[in-house]
Amino acid sequence: MATDKNKINFWDRPIVITLIGGVLLGLVTTAWQMQENRARLDLEYERTLIAERKSLLQEFPSKYETLGNIVNAWFARVIWIAEEKNKPPTQATRKNIDEWTKTAHALEAKYQESGSLDGLLARIGVSYRCSAVKEASNQFLVEWYSFQNAFQEFNRKWNDKQKLSSPDIQKAKTDRIDILNRLEMKQKELVGKMGGELFRTRQNIHDCPA
Image (cartoon, rainbow, N blue to C red; front, side, top):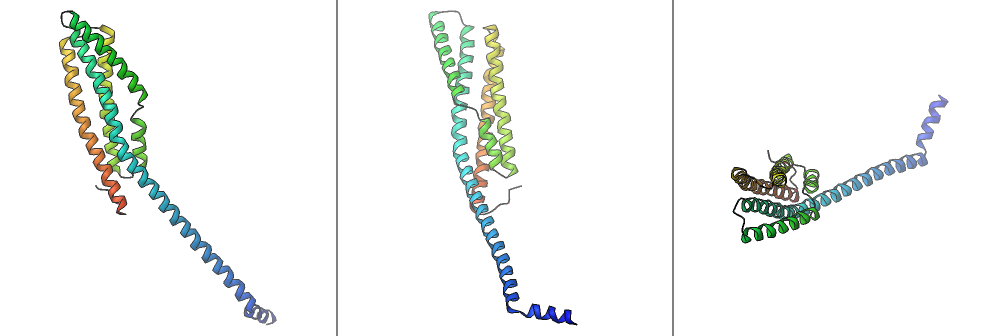
């Protein structure tokens, strides 16, 4: 009975209630502060993502236009040189070949200085959460590689043989136009999906379209 009485007396002491109340208040305050910090960090992270997505939406079309124009012009010059080589040699054809060869070399140097699209597309894949954007990014990259490969294969044949048949040249011309058209479609599709996700994020809508 003495033990029970001591327990009752212990819990009846005001200082005990004060201490327990202080501990509980501290726990509640700590939990609230942790929740506030987590919400603040989440908000900062979301703002950083929005800024990155906006930057990529502006950067990607410009980067693609720059690199696409370089590769396209380079590809075209090699085709022109190959066509000119099949003509009877004259002062005019030699002049054209020399001029276009110099231009092709300048474009090659410019391409090397301009970097690649791979890193930019990788950033898009990380920064955008919607699978539709990631899929569109992958599809664009496939077409971009196809464009590069078509040019590199034709350029390699030209460098090896220094003279190509008309069917080979015509095929390169057709491939260049076809792939460029597909690239333009894929680029517009990707930019549209990126813009759509950025808009939904700003409206605090996190669901991705099916």
